[in-house]
Image (cartoon, rainbow, N blue to C red; front, top):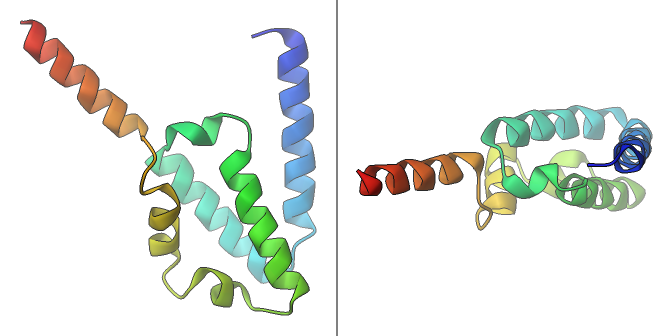
Length: 107
Protein backbone atom coordinates (compact mmCIF):
# COMPACT_ATOMS: atom_id res chain seq x y z
CA UNK A 1 0.00 0.00 0.00
CA UNK A 2 1.36 3.36 -1.00
CA UNK A 3 1.43 6.38 1.26
CA UNK A 4 -0.97 8.19 -1.05
CA UNK A 5 -3.47 5.33 -0.59
CA UNK A 6 -3.13 5.56 3.19
CA UNK A 7 -3.69 9.31 3.13
CA UNK A 8 -6.73 8.93 0.87
CA UNK A 9 -8.11 6.20 3.13
CA UNK A 10 -7.76 8.46 6.16
CA UNK A 11 -9.45 11.30 4.30
CA UNK A 12 -12.37 9.04 3.37
CA UNK A 13 -12.66 7.76 6.94
CA UNK A 14 -12.70 11.30 8.38
CA UNK A 15 -15.46 12.29 5.95
CA UNK A 16 -17.38 9.17 6.97
CA UNK A 17 -17.01 9.98 10.69
CA UNK A 18 -18.20 13.54 10.01
CA UNK A 19 -21.36 12.13 8.38
CA UNK A 20 -21.98 9.95 11.43
CA UNK A 21 -21.53 12.92 13.78
CA UNK A 22 -24.11 14.87 11.77
CA UNK A 23 -26.77 12.24 12.49
CA UNK A 24 -29.26 12.67 15.35
CA UNK A 25 -27.98 11.34 18.67
CA UNK A 26 -30.11 8.15 18.69
CA UNK A 27 -28.85 7.27 15.21
CA UNK A 28 -25.25 7.87 16.32
CA UNK A 29 -25.63 5.53 19.29
CA UNK A 30 -27.10 2.73 17.18
CA UNK A 31 -24.50 3.28 14.43
CA UNK A 32 -21.66 2.93 16.93
CA UNK A 33 -23.15 -0.29 18.30
CA UNK A 34 -23.53 -1.65 14.76
CA UNK A 35 -19.95 -0.67 13.99
CA UNK A 36 -18.68 -2.46 17.12
CA UNK A 37 -20.70 -5.54 16.24
CA UNK A 38 -19.46 -5.62 12.66
CA UNK A 39 -15.84 -5.09 13.71
CA UNK A 40 -16.20 -8.00 16.13
CA UNK A 41 -17.90 -10.35 13.65
CA UNK A 42 -15.47 -9.28 10.96
CA UNK A 43 -17.00 -9.41 7.49
CA UNK A 44 -14.08 -9.25 5.08
CA UNK A 45 -15.69 -6.52 2.94
CA UNK A 46 -15.83 -4.21 5.95
CA UNK A 47 -12.12 -3.46 5.64
CA UNK A 48 -12.38 -2.68 1.91
CA UNK A 49 -13.15 1.03 2.01
CA UNK A 50 -16.22 2.10 3.95
CA UNK A 51 -18.80 0.57 1.60
CA UNK A 52 -21.00 -1.29 4.08
CA UNK A 53 -20.67 1.34 6.76
CA UNK A 54 -21.36 4.13 4.27
CA UNK A 55 -24.46 2.28 3.15
CA UNK A 56 -25.67 2.19 6.74
CA UNK A 57 -25.04 5.93 7.09
CA UNK A 58 -26.95 6.52 3.83
CA UNK A 59 -29.87 4.55 5.21
CA UNK A 60 -29.72 6.42 8.53
CA UNK A 61 -29.55 9.81 6.79
CA UNK A 62 -32.66 8.94 4.79
CA UNK A 63 -34.47 7.73 7.91
CA UNK A 64 -33.57 10.84 9.88
CA UNK A 65 -34.57 13.11 7.00
CA UNK A 66 -37.98 11.48 6.83
CA UNK A 67 -38.46 11.88 10.59
CA UNK A 68 -38.25 8.19 11.47
CA UNK A 69 -36.75 6.94 14.70
CA UNK A 70 -33.67 4.79 14.31
CA UNK A 71 -35.46 1.62 15.42
CA UNK A 72 -38.06 2.22 12.74
CA UNK A 73 -35.21 1.96 10.25
CA UNK A 74 -33.36 -1.03 11.74
CA UNK A 75 -36.17 -2.81 13.51
CA UNK A 76 -36.15 -3.52 17.25
CA UNK A 77 -33.51 -6.27 16.94
CA UNK A 78 -30.43 -4.39 15.78
CA UNK A 79 -28.23 -7.52 15.90
CA UNK A 80 -30.62 -9.28 13.51
CA UNK A 81 -30.45 -6.21 11.26
CA UNK A 82 -26.65 -6.56 11.23
CA UNK A 83 -26.79 -10.29 10.60
CA UNK A 84 -29.09 -9.71 7.62
CA UNK A 85 -26.62 -7.18 6.21
CA UNK A 86 -23.73 -9.63 6.27
CA UNK A 87 -25.52 -12.96 5.84
CA UNK A 88 -23.88 -13.62 2.46
CA UNK A 89 -20.53 -12.08 3.38
CA UNK A 90 -17.41 -14.01 4.16
CA UNK A 91 -16.08 -13.37 7.65
CA UNK A 92 -12.57 -13.72 8.99
CA UNK A 93 -13.85 -16.71 10.97
CA UNK A 94 -14.87 -18.34 7.68
CA UNK A 95 -11.40 -17.71 6.22
CA UNK A 96 -9.79 -19.17 9.33
CA UNK A 97 -11.94 -22.30 9.16
CA UNK A 98 -11.15 -22.76 5.46
CA UNK A 99 -7.44 -22.37 6.20
CA UNK A 100 -7.59 -24.84 9.08
CA UNK A 101 -9.39 -27.38 6.90
CA UNK A 102 -6.82 -26.98 4.13
CA UNK A 103 -3.97 -27.46 6.61
CA UNK A 104 -5.70 -30.51 8.09
CA UNK A 105 -6.18 -32.04 4.64
CA UNK A 106 -2.52 -31.50 3.79
CA UNK A 107 -1.41 -33.67 6.71
